[in-house]
View (cartoon, rainbow, N blue to C red):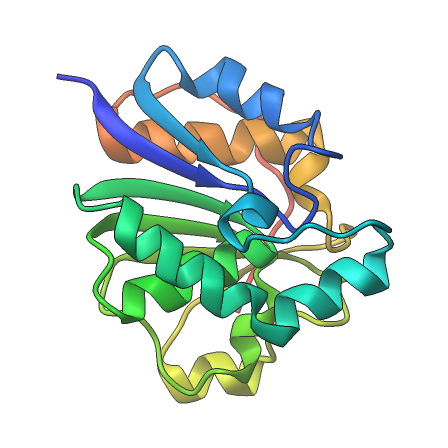
Length: 189
């Protein structure tokens, strides 16, 4: 039986998310995939799509709206792969009872403001050059391990090397397939 994977986009949703097709290409033959555009989950309808406008819309109720919608839509325990704002949405939904088998968050920087974690298995991946990633003190205080990829910024999830690494990790977790991969230099904190 194919496992269910829910993917939640970054703040740009499908508008600037051509990179998401690479994840789908790797994963669609192994998973039954449901994709959510974060902006649609949050009911954002902005005339001007600047980074500042979109970011503020998520902070001013968009994240909470998206969490509520995700909780209403998703009742089946599933694997989750979520990017940036999408990671924050799923993280918060998991804390409110979203049925999560495991959560793989990439660049979910806003969770650094939380002082609690969801009671689900999760992995956190950040770029070493992402100035907004959670601090080592935050991670230590919550008993969390974060993986930090040196020489990458916030949008590391758009890089083909990271895409392959993340997909292989998910496939290994779910299917127990072992696929040889080129090791990336990494720092685990």
